[in-house]
Structures are given as C-alpha cells and as structure tokens.
Image (tube, rainbow, N blue to C red; front, top):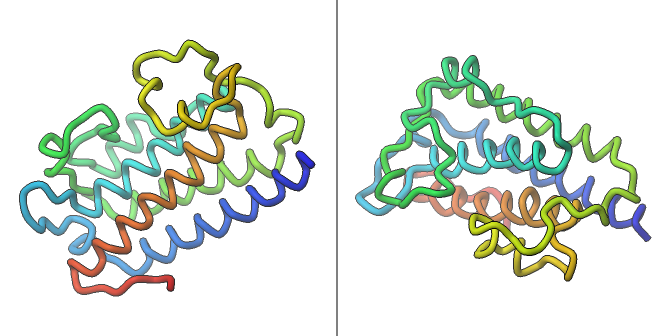
Length: 188
C-alpha cells in the first residue's frame, strides 16, 4: 500500500507542477505584479510564497539545503525577501517579483528537486515523523497539525499538506486573480 500512495502522490505533484508552469508561462510580470487594491495580495505573493515554502519544506522533510540563497535573491529581486508565512496581508501587499524570468528558473528548479525527491523516496519513509508532538507554536495552528496523527507530522503528512494541498490552494488563488488581470482560468 505505501507504494500505491507514493505513486499517486508522485503523479499528483507532477500534475500540480504542470499547472504552475502553465500559469507562469501564460503570465507576464505586468500580471503577477498587478496591484488591484489594498487588502488584495498580488499574484507575485502567491507565486513566491508557495514556491519558497515548497523549497523550505523539502529542507524539513529531507534535511537537504534549500535552493533559495542570496544568489537567487539577487537574481529574482523580490520586493520583500520573505515568503510571508508569519506576516500580515498589509505587510505583504507590496510583494513584487523584480526579474520574472529568474523567478521562473527558481520555480523550475524547486519543482524538479521535489519530483526527484519523490522519485527516490523509499515508501517506508512515508511514516517517519518529521515534527513530533507537542508542536512548536509556529506549527500548532496549521492545517498539518490538524491532520497529524498521535506521534506528530509524518513525511506523508508533510508531502500532502505542505506541498500538494498547499500548492493547490495557492493555484486556486492564482486562477481567481488571473481574472482580475484580464486572463482566464486554466482548469474546469
């Protein structure tokens, strides 16, 4: 059964990444950096937030270093060099991507890394606990804490919540925001 679960997750992550690549490929910096109005985050927020969190969460799951480092920051030129997880909408409303092509390269590198990790993952690893109970404050109020079993958040919980479900959530935001910038949705 773990092999079936991993196979399903591998296919779902690849499909989700393909949606992200389609979205990014059909938008320009004028779309992702569009300011609608106060209280409405630009597409740039959802893009960077999710991709940077995917990168960070692979560090938590695998222990391998993040791809994001100062060189990427210098290339991508985020207006706010933070994924924004611990910040308010008011603090992140000014998020912008300076070099959209460089951001696309970063996103492609993170997607490739995730898919490579999943391809190499031993199905027995799915039950390994990566965040044991009691949860730290930063984790205690998250969706993954609600999903976690009695021992804590497992590799499978992290992959499902932090990568797959989180990615789909932000893709939904991006699809909705595409309408605000004159683009259509991508799925039915």
